Length: 423
Image (cartoon, rainbow, N blue to C red; front, side, top):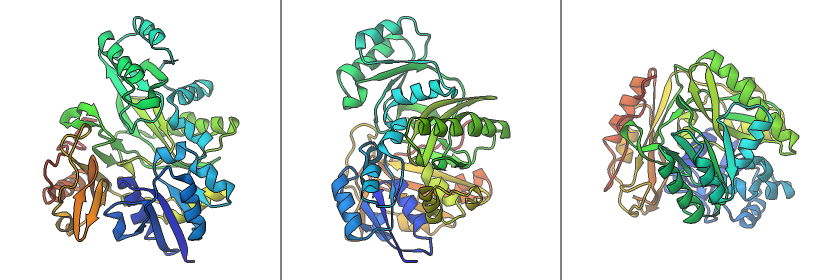
């Protein structure tokens, strides 16, 4: 076959997906909308935004795209999948109704409660005075979340009532996350370690990926504000078979069944963020798409044709045996712009990517980059994802950091402790 694939998005996740898609013998042309500097080496970038649904549909028709793959949550939330399906265009990703599992934390928490999925106790609020009244009865720390999409930054852990009231003021009054903060979720703080799980689903069945662990805070030792993610390791050795059984039978399958009962059949990548404390597994939140930077490690470990897997999900006949994994470990270290997740400069020249990729087992996935002639320039908060594989976790980490040392741009910031948390 000579398949033409369109990937919606332009970050590190999409670069990793395109890198894997390009390995499929059935694919001879890949487009990315809008893509980025690194993606341009593998795909043709198209100047269409991720929420420009009509333009994306028109492009897919014009180019006779065989399959579209959606990367970002924002595109799913505005209903790009529904629009493609209406035109009989094949697309991998959940509908707007199913993507509510991420786009509305209030909807997600209510769905979990209804289907007995383990999660923290919570209340939803649309009135700031009611929310502040409730804070008086909370035990601390407590967690305040904007219900809508906030680029991974809408969760604030509050150590006391004053902090929690300030969080409510920022989210509900100051609208730092816009309309995403019209509803807030206040929930109990969960003890344990966060673990990312991904599952591909055809609407009924699911294939669960190996475990991974993101490092969300900007500074070493998990200090500072949350980001979209500063680094990932996979798999996680201390997660037990019993934990995985709980994840499969008490979390992933029940939420797929629950969504189907709400007429919101979920086809795509379901990504539960979990908190594991010994035998206890709780759901922190659900995402309706591949994680970023989790995708960058998963694509390094996947040993199957991803296009065939996507097709089987769309067709409703996913075969778990179809999804095979390489042995060993993969890691990602994110190189961010100075100042991220606050204000940062762009347009700064990047050096050393080519030298880094000459190292064995290293691939650099681009997130916030653009290309000017032969020069890569910074164009976002998270700029590059330096990935490495190894037979052991320490080997993969050592290789990744060796590659990181070769790359430079002004103000570059990265965590030096990825994969160093005590288990």
